[in-house]
Length: 422
Image 1 (cartoon, rainbow, N blue to C red):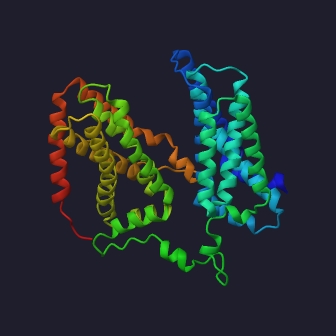
Image 2 (cartoon, rainbow, N blue to C red):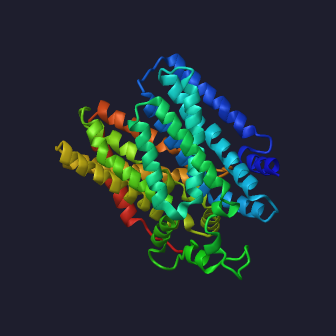
Image 3 (tube, one colour):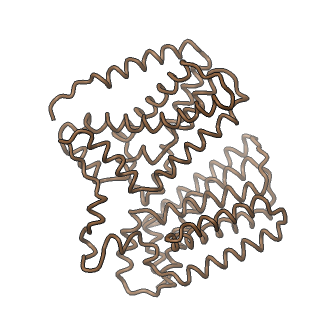
């Protein structure tokens, strides 16, 4: 039974013939070989390497466990007769293999290509990946006690960073992995199904919507002014991980001036603005919500009604991070002027416009779970374009004033665009 359950989830994640796995592994090999022959080397301590791999693996595993699309498959599997322990470990094994092979494998290829390492360290990195998968799954099954999970994660991170003895660290991780296995042995499949009791209370069929679902449903009411903004904020309130990602970007905006202050000229500010545009969750609303995309494309006049508010929403999120970045720079280094502020407005607006255009004309298709959306290569298109634009500004400073003039034209268009008929 365990083998059949794991195979069913694996086919869903990797494809019917595991074709996605072969493509991903080939890409990892090409990236490793390309970086290796380039000769680019960076000194990375073993503890930092283990922490990067563990944190990245645990984060992706948590996203995979939290996927709404994955919850549909899990609900159907839970209707079948199954042994709780076998079901849990087969489910965790399938998601763990997906996380390690399709996501962490890329990070591992980059680290192995650009840093010096010994063959024996591969065992430690493989152990850290297995440990991260089990710990994330165990913490997710006990997510009601989130404070305990937070303390648990903080303790492990502190041990990896400050425990100098490799022997003691290995023993600690092994003991921690054993605790995670014990927690998973006591869990059942319903511990991984999101809000089963909240969404489907007794007396309501599984296929029907409960009051909690109706309360969280995302309905666009076009006749009420500002309803799209209510939809955007309601969507964020129903996806706490999106808010966490935005908070992380704000933390990056606070500490980034410390690392960029050695760079000179106006080029440093566009670089910061480009990095802060890497807020993936708010830029994939159409790709991750198929019902919303169908409604927006089916109803007449939705291109203007949806795209302009959506662009302004992403602009406001980008601008919030840019303002924090500028305030942090002023506190740490000083020297902020009007041109820099106008540059922040320009780059925030251009990032928002490009993100909306990508979502409208090139939405992400064929994804399996939401983690695929978060780590899709398309997420780097907008930041790379912004970095290229920043390099152009550095080479030709007069281009900055041309871009600011373009910004003024765009603002006028957004403010005075004709509304037309609905």
